[in-house]
Image (cartoon, rainbow over all chains, first blue to last red; front, side, top):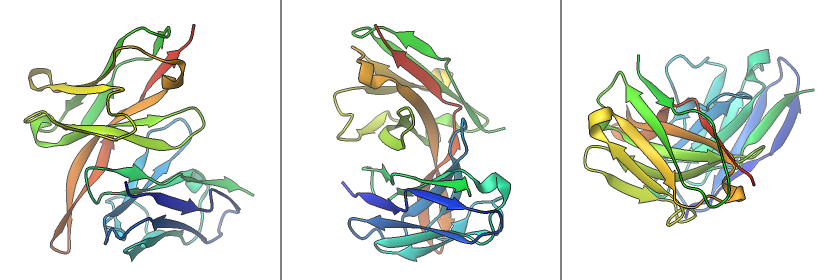
Length: 107
Length: 125
């Protein structure tokens, strides 16, 4: 299985802050990575696919980068609705995996 | 509107069987994989398995192989996740999700783009 390791697992930040979340894959997955946002009590929501392509309707303050084994999700300026948990997800095969998640909380 | 609607919350005893459902609407159900994802209380997302309703091709995560059965009924546009003998450790929120193709830079990426609302399964004596 391809393992995904997210860091940090917890992040405390303020509205307006720039935050970056890292996802490392145990082997190269090219650009076969997606990012999801999960608000409390809700189903996950697709933010980014192909490592860096924004899903339709997702605000431009979200961006993704990376290829191979190291990927990042950046929120350029946190809004109140961005306080949630974020997961990376590798799409490289039928042995799909998610990262452990990064909870972004209000400082 | 494209949506997945899951069956309601369940409370079961250890050893009992259970089948939960996920009904798709607003799209061609047989043309997209449906996956199942577990979320234990306070924990992250775990991929369990996936089925292509068009031909019932099914793949399981090694962690869930033999523990659950995934199936689909084309006639009712419904996917299912079932257990033959529940354990307390099966207590979790279960999501179904559609795996849709997205195209970028001459490549296709299959992502979970539509999610059900989740089904809470509680197993307790």
